[in-house]
Length: 215
Image (cartoon, rainbow, N blue to C red; front, side):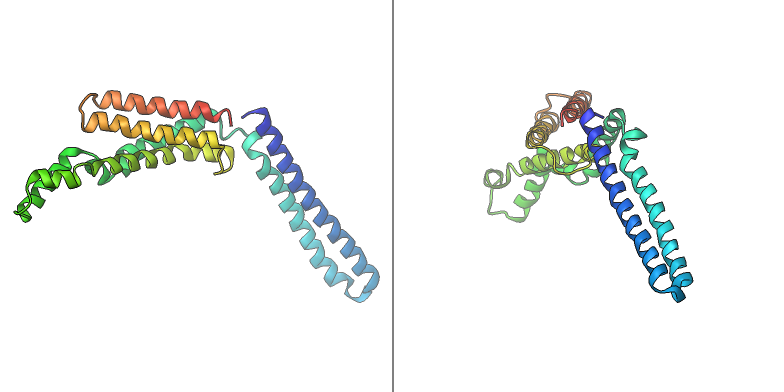
């Protein structure tokens, strides 16, 4: 957590406490006015206002704790962000891909082309390849974008906003394209194995994590 983050959290806490304190003060004035103007209702109204007063005091204390828990308790440390980003990578790459894992491979599409050719005997394989031969490309790109969004969610939680700086959004897009390119080298070009593939992806996660410290 940077010094700027500490200052921002402290400012948010101060504003919340000030607002709650103002409401409590207004209730105190109202309670005094009721006692002075309507003596007959003093007990009943006074008890109700006193109850509201106590509830607002409790809300003020809770608000102060909630506004500052992120910084003072250090529950969301940079190391926790990194671990969550790695977890998001594992979940996305090994559990959430679903049909994408097949559709980003040329061989899967070749099987589809063979079935199309069998159903449409008037079309030869070269014609089918010319039409559908690069359908795996958008799947690779979409998987890269999905992966980049998933691994960035912990950064959004750490920063407390989904409105990340433009330069960081550009970095996310670059990482998404790089992820797609690495997957293409593994799935279609057979230039790298799974070990190298995952090593590059983990390096991407670490790079995004290090860049997040500059936000």
